[in-house]
Image (cartoon, rainbow, N blue to C red):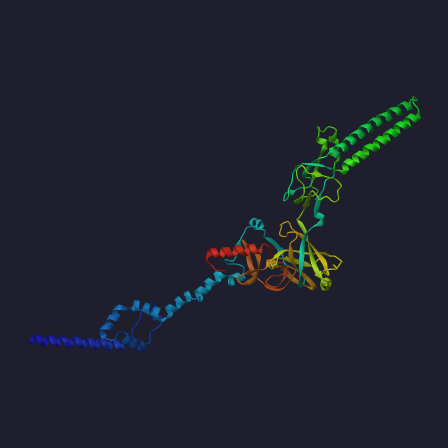
Length: 473
């Protein structure tokens, strides 16, 4: 009985202690240590939450066990977005810390100074090999834009039809269609009986002249000694003059068929049969675009109806004839900038109006404005049709650059400028576009250096570098 009484008393003491503990916990707020302490929790809300979530005193003990101060603070920070979580948000969603990264990676503040990572690093030699050309920004006239159809043609001064000068048979062919030849290169060998005859006549005339000269010299010597008469001397002089005229005529005929003085000296010593050889040579450097001759074929000199044996063109310079409508003729001026574009609108090349022909075609009712184009890069092909974008009308002086110098970089119109170690894009504001040039309103000053040719190459390299770094420029 005594033991039972002592057991009951012990239970009462334990119950009283538990009640006291629960009361003190209800009155005393929960203190969170560590990072979560930056934002204290509302007591009433938390008490309610604890009551809803945990229900009993025993569970409260479990909660206290399971959610120790520091660990629970971290869990609450993650769950309820307090100060620490706000810091994480800034990291994840582009607040202060990420904004700094953004400026570095995407060219904000640093880009305005042409620094940071938006630089194409190229040495001077590499840039030159890549075709990068620098120019100074200058003020120049820029008018309105007028787009007209145009056709690319060969320069008539750089085109040659090669025909035979002597009749004969084609013995050898040295060049074919598509071959590039230099001035004086052999195209074909003609075996010509006519040429052999002309050379023989010249040799005979030369021999006769030489003998006549000797006879005249002897007659004059005898006459000076009063051994012969003056009539004999006069006859010898006449004979010499006739032989000389005959020789000169034979030489002229040889020159007419392409035999020069150097070749004349070799006629007398030529091997058998060689005096019948006539070579067709290239009258200019260029490309053979047509050949109308075969081995063993017979050719006739002086036949105007016969087709040329070879056609050679030099397409390093071309003509582009623009069809100018009657109402626009007065607006087109010599020297006006012209951009030649493809059907897709891409600029192929740029030049200026060389002259306007003062004749209007009776059928098309258009005049021709001719543009002379340097075509060493083979950008144009004769027979090709293009769109000519002319600068016309009343031009005004603006700061202008070639249209190809302006590239879209990160959504902004930009020109590339030289910086330490390479080239960087500089944002610009553009205005009027005409004749392959574009007005620069802001972003570039007169005298500033910029990349006038090769900007697209730099843009491509910049995008390649950005992709390699994992940044989406």
